[in-house]
Structures are given as structure tokens and as C-alpha cells.
Length: 314
Length: 247
Image 1 (spheres, chains in turn blue, purple):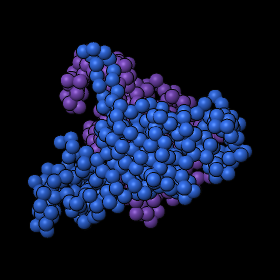
Image 2 (tube, chains in turn green, red):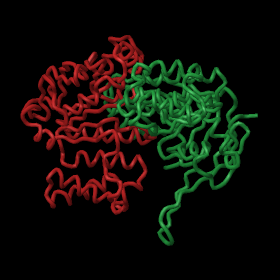
Image 3 (cartoon, each protein chain N blue to C red):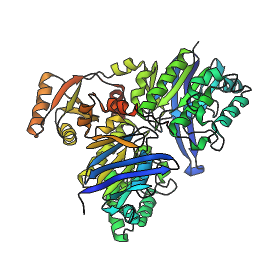
Image 4 (tube, one colour):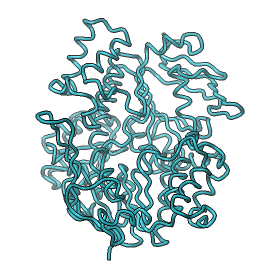
């Protein structure tokens, strides 16, 4: 049986009273499942509903509708048992800033009736990197070190499921890669990991990915499967003057969409044929662009995400 | 006035015996989009805090917006815009109140303020939301509003500290179009980011490692000199050389 099963979970927040009552739906019926030793990535921007879902699955808030089980246990009925089996790293750093690194570790271990010594092997690899600073107050650690401490605290009671809410937001590219290497090793030990991120490139490191926006999973598959959902032929265009190039691509009558993607612009055509390509390239030459490169490319998860969100909002 | 928006000369900041920023020297031209990159703990935030005159350097010198960092810090503050990493508007004030608050701080007259408020709301398409609390706006709109407010007083330079963290990919791109527009109007943009695709959108990029600037060039020249296919690879090659512990 899958270790995390989420079935049609809904959640709406209400503010104000009477006529001023405002209802904000955060989750509009989310369903997915996650097996043992699997990394499930929840990819979406701030405000998509990721944190609400994490709080429901860690039994911190109740859903309005739907069901979910964690390790076969019901999130409402069996909340006490679930808390023993879940490691949770919230999006906002939530350890005690005025306790030292070591004191935070000891506190979390003792809450779960264990000791750092007993479970040292679980956190060794991560904790060793911050151990030289164990007498430093948590509030005085850098972002990367806080992240390692939070992960160590989330692992100290030997959880079977690890829930990480945007662990890499604001973290640099090198530390992000190291963090994901760490997750791979934890996964190899059989841990089930549910992780959310706004970075599309991290999706490729998950076994399964759910794309979430406005409280709905609009796509769920393997990373490759998600890319394959983008069926329109895609081209990458670059030139000497990138921003004017983007504007002229959008003005072209033959271009469907044009988005900046780092060193090139990703382009789809209204008429994706050699004639269509020729028309756009001529248009660019007429507009005075130089140094143009134009090539067919495979879509990324970010292409898929943007195609969905722009369709939904146009 | 010089042609440079920023001229930094051996700018250094020490905390006790720890050198957070180690003799950085660089120039940023007028109207340039300058990407200021580096790993966590490399010294970016400390360097930026010195440039916006919030932190006094241990040694070295700089001019920012034509003013001397050591002798004219208050003039610098009046002539720059700053958008902090954490969202910088007041959530419990309305859109219009936030604009009035920041306009007042920067000493705009009532007349200027009225005209610029109208223009800003029109440009962002926020006219009908002007009476709403900022806390109730979607993140993407907040970020665009924060940027517009940061340049409300038409500063010569705007400093943006990770302006697109956590923002969805469509809004992230819309934000960069606002940066391009600002640069085209002559405002120099000094920006930090962890998204390496965004490094490509900068005219020039510097990469900090262990408190020093280890590389500074256009994205295409950096890729050439490090034989890298992307800025991500350039960044990884440089940042992996870091010897000091993150923190």
C-alpha cells in the first residue's frame, strides 16, 4: 500500500463575518499517492496551496473535505500516531532561535523519547556539517546551516515519511544540488519524501511530480511524462539583442507564444511547419535582428507549467 | 557626475576577525542591469548593505549615485531605491496608502505624488484595487507593486535583493520585463538572484566567492572563459571553489 494517500482533500479559509465574510479556497480537491522510497515533488508558486496541504498531512490543521492516510493511518483519527512517524520541515525556519544547535537537537530528540546519541547514525552525514557550530545559537546560523539543522531535527526520531516545505527557497545553486543529493540517500534508506519547491529544475530529481496552481493539481506524472504533455513543437531563438528580440517575436503574426528562458527565448508557432518557421525568421530579419540562432528543442517542465498557467489566465 | 552609477574600490567589511567582504573593486555603468551573484554566505548581502549606506565599511571606498559612501551616506539613501528580499510593503496598509507612505519618505510633493500614483496604478492595472490591503494581493502583484514603489522617486539606481524568490514562472518573467523597462528609462539596476536563467538577462554579472569578486563579465564572455554551456555551470565551477564554511 502507498505510504501517503491523499484523496480529494479540500480546504477553504474564511476571514471576516456576516456580509464581509471572505472565503479563500486553498485546496480544491487534491488527490495523489506516494510509495515507500519515493520522492514526490509538489511544484508550484507561492500561494498555490502547498503549505496548506503539508499542514493537513502533518495533522496540524483539519481539511474541510476528503481523506488522507499516512502510513495507513487516518490523518484525523490517528493524528497522534502519525506525528511519531512524520518528519516535518516547515517553510519558515521554526526551530528555537535562542537555543543552540545542540540544544535544539536534544529538545527534538527528547520530545520523541529518544536521544541524539541513540539515533546519531540517522543524522550523522548532515549533522556533522554543522557540529563544529553546535554551541552557536540557531538564530545566528546562515541560511544553509539553518536548513541542515532543520533537516537534522526532522530526522532525529527516525520518521518513515519526510515532509519538506520549500526546503531550498532562497538557497544557492550549489547548496540546492547538495541538498537533493542528500534526499537521494535518504530515499535509498526507504524513506518516503514529499517535497515542495518553486524551482522547476528540481522537479527532474523527483520520481513523481505534481504541478499545483490555485489549489489544484493540474498535472501529475513522472518528470519525463510531464514534459511529454507539452505536445506543441518548440523552438529556441537567440540573437544579439535579446529583449527587443522577445518583443518582436511577440509582435510576429506567426508566433503563438514567446517566453524568455535564460540565454534563449522559447517559441511556439501558430503554423508549426517549415513555412511557418521561414515566415518568423524572415520577420526577424526584416525587423533588423542580427546574430539569430533558431533551433528545435525539447520542452522542459517549466515550459509545461507556463503553458498551463498562461492558458488558464488568458 | 561620473558615468558610473557605482564605483567600489577595495570595499571591505570585517566582523571581528571574520572578513565578510574582502576588498571588492568594481564599476557599474549608468543604465546597466548588473547581476550580483554568489553562494549563500559569500558576502552578497553584506556588500549590498554597504552600497545602500546601511552598513559602514571597515576599509575601502565607493561612490554610489555620484555620492561618496563615507561622507555622503544620507544623499545616497535619497538617490537610490531598494527592494528587500523580504517583502517590503506594509501588508496592513492599502495599495494607495503604501504609495503615499513611501512617496512621503522620499519627499515627493503632493502634486508629484498624485500624478505618479495615478500613473503607477494605471501601468500595473491596479486602479480598482487601490483601496485594497496589500496583504490581500497575490504575491506576483505585490512584487510588481514593491518594485514600482522602490522606483517611485525616480532614483538613479535601484537595488533588488532576490526579487523573484518563490514567484511563479510567468510572474518571474513579467517582473524581468519591468526591470528591462526601468533600465531602458535610464535607471541602473543592481540585482541578486538564485535563478541562473535570470543571470542571463543581466548586461554583466559578478560572482562572489568567499567575500571576493572572483568573476565579472557579460554572461556570454563568462560562459566562454569557463567553457560552460550555461551560467549554472559557470556558477557551480566558481562556487565549488569556496573554502569558507557557509556561515
